[in-house]
Length: 259
Image (cartoon, rainbow, N blue to C red; front, side, top):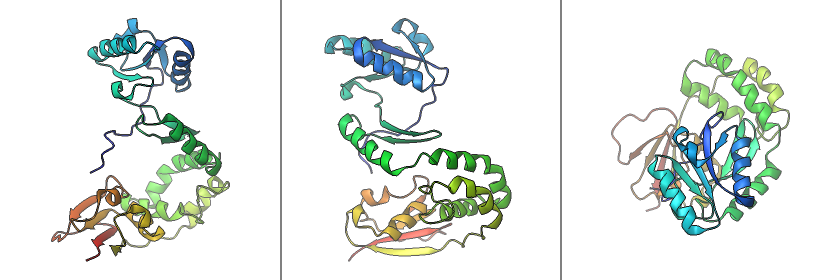
């Protein structure tokens, strides 16, 4: 199992009160962050209206005391520069609204998260927003074209691959959504793929193995397959240790360790 200890979430705060306790640059930065997300900045005195709180105080004892008071009132608390006191941490955000890419180190290094986000900024085009909106607008049309959810997912997976009709890194992809809906062939039926792993390092997966692992509906694996490799699969994919006597549904990837 993964040892990160955090469940990545996007918490909706539009028009929702969020407590910010802090002065100076750190406090102002947290207020701007909440306001940019559409939240309503409020004080500790209004904590009964909120569920989230940011504490940005220079005095470590005062920051700990405020965090304890807020936590006792049922709020989830983030304390600036004190990851050991945080119920949640803030990722570095790449914004292509409505696409948000979050990079987090679990509070270990905000500088590292920022530099990774800046690398991604150079790779992911602004047109991602247009593509996301076009796909959202086409949701009902896609359901009508492919009523089966698994078939619909396979069609989208195929169209969004590198070099395909809706390649997310190609600026004109959003304009092709309508044409793709009208001309896309029926997705290939799901198959079964058996891989013998070269090593315990997920970086040694081939591009094809990594892609199919990320798309698979069912993962069958030897007990010795490391969790770092299983973590590359979809979180909602069914997983079964081998030998498996049941029926494996959808796209199946079987992972075996080298004997």
